[in-house]
Image 1 (cartoon, rainbow, N blue to C red):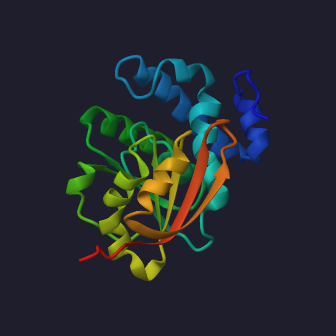
Image 2: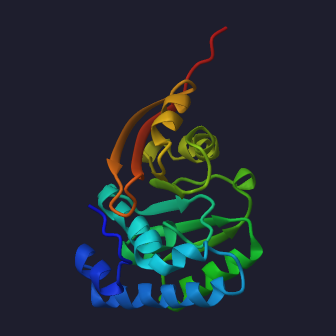
Length: 215
């Protein structure tokens, strides 16, 4: 069961067995988020009351879903860096953070610098991104699943030799989104209950290809 009380940094650390060094880096991230969010709209003000659950834990739960050999990920529409920047801090992956908003990109660059995260910020609309090969594609609260697969498609295509996977954090409508997506896309889909949100799911997708359209 998910506790109703806000998750403290200490309980977050204990739950995921985060090292002291990485906890310090995530705490810097949290401090910067609070500072910047007062000036620009990075995340909802209401969610800041439970920052360690709503943003840090929500993102960090993907650690267990990363393929062992994965080296690079791309986070589509990263916003305030969730989940991509959290994963860059907690794992050895290099994260490419895709964000079209100049101020959000400035925030991401500053947090990556302060935390020494292995992350690159790409100030570009997803549709205009020059695709490059990665092992993992992530997204959170960005778009319905069919749209996410459209966004991911050029990257999946160029990454084919690396057997890429998609890790998408989805809400209560995940099942109907999957049903809609499967009309146009063939994929192997697994989903897992979110540890941060009782209505949420972690969707793990691979072997993704567009279905041949009927003549």
